[in-house]
Image (tube, rainbow, N blue to C red):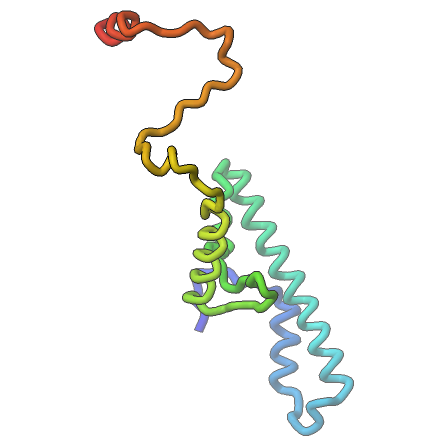
Length: 148
C-alpha cells in the first residue's frame, strides 16, 4: 500500500490504463489489444517518471539546494549494475564491489621497475625541475622563519 502523504509519480491516466490492463481477460494474452495497451502504459510511465523527476529537480533549484539533495530524492545513490572488463554485466553487490576494487587496484598499481638505489634508499628522491631561477635556502634562513 502506498503512503497517503506521498504524491504518486504516475498520472491518473496511467493509473487508469494499468487498472484496465489488470481487468483485461487473461484468455488471449498475446492479443494485439493487450500489446498496444502495454506499449501505451510503458510510454506513459516513462513520461510520468521523467516529469516527476524534473519537478523534483526544479523544486530543489528553486529552494536553492544542492545537487546532492535532489539525487537523494530521486533515489539514485548507488550502483546497481556494472559492466565488467570482459563485457559481462554484474548485478549483485559483492560482484559490483569486486569489479570496482579490481578496476582501481589495476589503475593505481605501480608497474614501473624500481632501481637498486631506490630499493636500498628509504628516503624519497628529490628531483628539481626548472628551478635554476630559485635561490637555495640556507639553514639559518629556515631557523629564522620557524622562530618568527
